[in-house]
View 1 (tube, rainbow, N blue to C red):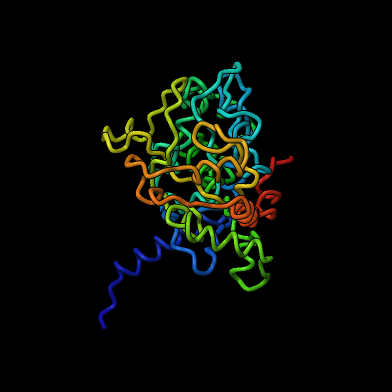
View 2 (view 1 turned 90 degrees about the vertical axis):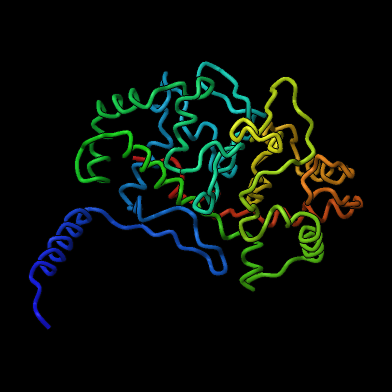
Amino acid sequence: MKFNWKIYLGLFIALIGFSFSNKFTTPLYLEVPQNWPKPFYDFKRNPITEEGFQLGRNLFYDPILSRDNTISCQSCHLQQTGFTHVDHQLSHGIEGKIGTRNSMALINLAWSKDFMWDGGVNNLEMQPLNPITNPLEMDETLEHVVTKLRASEKYRKLFAKAFGDEKVTSQRLLKALAQFTVMLKSSNSKYDRVMRNEEQYYAREQRGYDLFKTNCASCHKEPLFSDDKFEKNGLALDTTLNDIGRIKITNKKEDYLRFKIPTLRNIQFTFPYMHDGRFKTLTEVVKHYNSLGNDKNLSKELVKPMNLSDNDRVDLVLFLTTLTDKEFLFDKRFSFPKE
C-alpha cells in the first residue's frame, strides 16, 4: 500500500492539537443507568470536563449573574429540594419582584429536548438566558455579566482552567453552566434500587406502584417519570396570572393551557406543584387528578376517571415517595462550592 504522507501528517497534527487542548483538563462522563434511554444532549458539542463543571458550579451559585448581585440560579433551585424552590408559589427575583411561574426542578436534564413550562427553549446551553434577562428574575444583560466576570480574578482563573485561557465570553459562560446542570442526574432512589433487585417494596408501596402504572405512567413514563411532552391537566386558568401555556410559543390553539410534563423524581421535596404552584401537597395533586371528569378539553390520557379510594390515594403517594433520591439531594459535588 502506498504511503500517503499528507493523510498521516494531518492525523498527527490533529492528534497533537487534541492532546494539547485537553492536556490541562480532566474529562467527565455522564454515566447512563442500565435500561435508560440515550440522552438527548449532544456531548460532542460541549464535552464535559471537571474544570468546566466546577466553573459552571461556581456560576450557578453566584448572584453576580443578576443586575444587583443578589439573585443566583440557586435562589430558585435549591439542591435539597430537587433544585427548585419550596418557600413560595412563584419564582422571586431581584428587588422582591415576583415571577409568573413556579420554578421547575433541575433533574436529569440530559434527557430533555425542551425546557421551561412552555418549551420556549430547546437547548440547555441557551436556557440560562431566560432567567438572566427576565426583568422579574435576574434582570441583567449577558454583556454586563461578561463584563463583571472579566473584572474578577477568580473567574479569569476558572475560565483559564476550563478553556485554556482567561478569555471570558458569553458562549463559554453558557457552556460552563450547561456542563454543571447536565450532570444533575438522579438515579438512586428506592424505586431504582427495586428495579435493580437490590431492595423490595413494602406491600402498600407495591400497591401504589401498581396504581401508578395504571393511572399515571402514560404521561410520567419510567424511568425518567416524564415523557418530555406538553399536556392539558384540567387546571383552570388563573386569571391573576393569565398564563395560557405553550400556545404563546407555537401560536396553535390546541396548545392553549398545555404545559410541560415535569419529572416525578424527588417529587416528595419539590413542592409546591403545578406550573403556578397552586398545590402544596402531593395529596392535593392526587385529589385533583382523581376529581377530573370526562372533559373533552383534557389530554386523552386523563379522560378516563381514576376512581381512587382514600386508601388508594395514600398508597399512590407512598409510592411517589420512593422516587426520592437522597444521594442526589445531598451530593456534595452539586452543593455550594466552598473555596
